[in-house]
Image 1 (cartoon, rainbow, N blue to C red):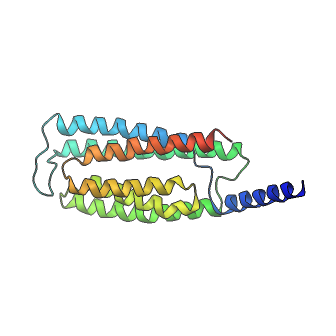
Image 2 (tube, rainbow, N blue to C red):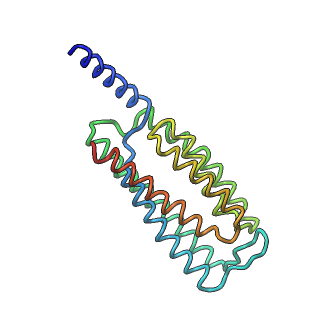
Length: 209
């Protein structure tokens, strides 16, 4: 009987240590919705790019897009990102409140800082490429830098974020080899993979809280 109590105490201590060093309120459902947003955005982007035959195999300048088309795609990308972030914040806040945990503490701050460093670096690098009209590498690099951001931040949150990051990095590298198909890889990475890992986290963590 005492041994069972000791095991329970050890388990409780481990849970307390995990909660103090990791932000565990990330909602799997937010990942699913982010994936759906990405698929919708990719479909609209596909209609803009490919319906007007704006694609040609031309080295690094694989996508030849009008100024209007570029602005539309940029607006779609920003919309997807903003909706994903807002959804993640709202659902994670609801999950943290349900668990009687703080949404904003030292752990979540470290999580955001470690996530943003690779992401901001990649964003600046991609903006410089766009300034030079190098479009073909945009989709692969968004996946690679996003994957690096996930891996870098994963030590402060759920372990599946690390697996998502590694998957995105691999997809980004493969996409670099198949220039001209970046939108399809982007849709698979940000869409399908988010839905896949989000579903796993939802059923493993969200439904048990």
